[in-house]
Image (cartoon, helix red, strand yellow):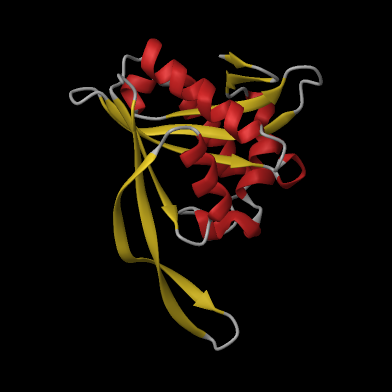
Length: 179
């Protein structure tokens, strides 16, 4: 799956160090479900399992975003919660800090949307993005996703200044691929 200056490829056993770096970057934990470090052992097992199951068996597909010229791994993009009956899936993306702000996320998202429509024959994609993640919201809106709902007080954030918890809304976005 190529798009302009990037391509998307399947995970390989050699991606263990890159996965370890991404999954253990605590600065991005606030945007996802992971809230704790992940061991190399667990990631190695994840890689072994993901390499032996198809998208249709596991319901998820994780791809590495690679810069065409250098071959550098820039981030990860995921399809998950695949629903064949209704031809839809959820999508998530993470770009490593050094590669952010260089349009790699937009290229990867467009490549995956094209793949989802043309190869997987999906009808729609969805994403859930915290209100505070302005960069991700801009990215998804720029690629044609539209707001379709708001989950009020959906995720808990630790208020480091006061030592208590606060809650944040999450925007629900979707893209109809058949339009």
